[in-house]
Image (cartoon, rainbow, N blue to C red; front, side, top):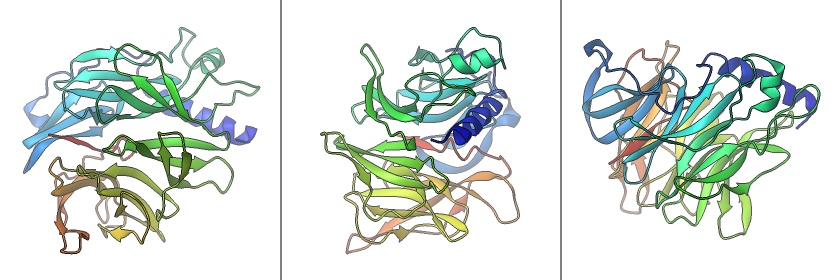
Length: 339
């Protein structure tokens, strides 16, 4: 990454994180929700997580309520059994990966990227690191995250590119999976068989674009996911492992598409709103949830659509239904759906 671009990234991250609390705490449970905080609507199967204003919300049955976070929580991810939540806690100049139980109670802190240097100081920038986008392995023993190998270096400070690291959810040592001096890594999703993961790779040059890559965990390396357009991001596998859903640009619009999990062929369109991202399959694979901006509005809301499967195995989405209005949900935090 060029020094100028690195400096810009570092400054942007400092500005964004400065809006959070000063220190990450593993007890960031939200206070009990008031009746006015609840959102009621469609009866959904399982439990769905989304983020609003740094607080993780939980939709179960016909109702959603705040679950976890005090303004710095982001990017929640259910464990495969639905008994734990991995999430990002943002603070001043850094972020960490924390674990909570299904009720939002604190369990563990997986990274320790913070420092005691004064908030908003240059010394704090040099001593801090970032971690984003936790995604569980299929057996639930570890979490892959996009993280930096070490704090910034140089003058002015330049952040290291985000690479993929496997963090054990219990005892054990972190395992670096992938890094590239010319690109950042973003959100990832494990194939249900655990043999590979698909992640978002963004080149750091002036023409860099988000693109889906597949990493073979058997050692064959990473390569562009066959058939995925550029730019594309927000990967999500169907529960049966047959499909990969993702967001992709189509001209000036962004919508959801799917490809076979093996890759190849032309992507199949699922939505036509032009502002859709963050797909999440229901646990039974019969629905897909996503975030989209309604016409004439400014923020993301939650939508769901039924899925239909043709005799030839093709997949189609039915008419989408809007579940929230005017909540201004965090698009980058995405959605996570568990049984």
